[in-house]
Length: 68
Image (cartoon, rainbow, N blue to C red; front, side):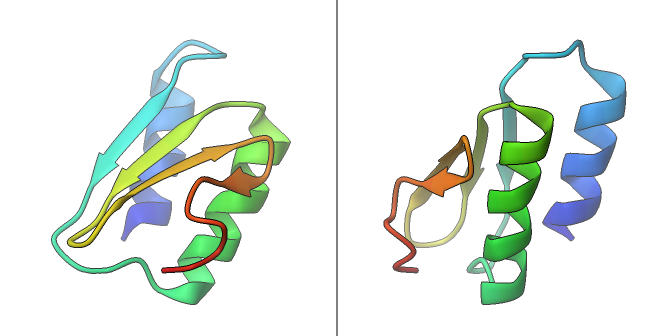
């Protein structure tokens, strides 16, 4: 799950570092909302690559405009 990958990335990288996650399926709505909140709480940029697009999460906002 991408949430597990993000959790591992947060604990194993220095604060402020951008996290990159690639997955072979589309991001589900639950994970999309969770990653938005995570990016806001930890104050990091999180980039998720799924099968159809890149999602750049920063300050609780996604570059896709919540269209996935």
